[in-house]
Length: 195
Image (cartoon, rainbow, N blue to C red):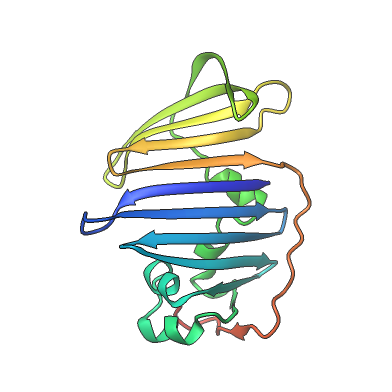
């Protein structure tokens, strides 16, 4: 499945917007994702590949530090280089999230969704609408999920709107083959090494 996610939120200090764009092609056991992270007038980019039990990551120093949480020396050391991260490393799970069809669809969970009446058109598809309101310590807002009508009700789009930020996720090209290759000359990160 081809997934495009665009999220906007205020920065921690409230002075600038943070924008994260994820473009993902997720397969059954592998996937590839292109990430663009914008904050405080700067832009960082990275590519994440999942092949079995290894994630490969390549990004610039800005995104490695500000989005992935690497220390400044790590970010500078790994910038522009492929890094391989095994499943046994604690960073694996967050990097591999949403890189397979199963993990992508598991992120669509909405508490107590209600189907809204009627159908509408979204991205050229006739869809049903599910809506869920969320109020918790970590987030408060409304999820809306648009699923195709008919025998194959696959997701087309999910929106999250809140006072703290918005996120739009679109889904297309379901069941498309995803071909991911192992990058050459990746630097291996030990299973116990902090990332």
